[in-house]
Length: 62
Length: 174
Image (cartoon, rainbow over all chains, first blue to last red; front, side, top):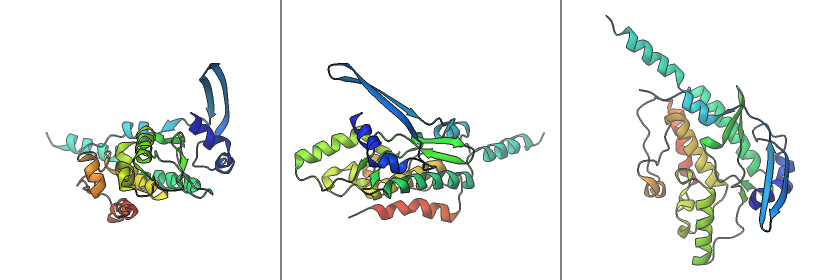
């Protein structure tokens, strides 16, 4: 999780924000639940479909 | 009784799969997203490009997601066996075997992992969009290292499409 945060909270986040082909990060929050455990929430833009589901719905048949 | 039923069914099924135009539409969007990452300074690698990480926002707009594996290019090659093992563990955790470039399959090659490694994965992704399987599914890591794959006879695509898939061979450093 820490890796995701490094790349989301510094420069790249600002530069990639607004690119039409990158899912947007809206906000993120985290809090410590116990000694070394963090609960992390990442709010992303909603995309109704996925390539995986499109391919599953259109099988390749001979 | 004629064969019309079967012909109709085959035609319907031919229509249902992704067309070459569909595939190019998806692929262009993915390439644009990857290009935006690679054009950052320092460049950011996605490292886990695959079908599962592409979302559809509208009929004609596809988006890249899952940046949990993203990282900048390492400043230098691993210097010793211990560093190679650490790199290997990191790759096993953050990347997907079938989409891995040779330098990721065998870190002992000590070849740089950079933008070209993402471009390799783009080639694998394009192959999967066309043929619904990855090019190295059958023969595994050895086939990746030797860049050995076959273009299935069906479905048929234009020769330009198969040349585009073949582009990822130029990502290999020897």
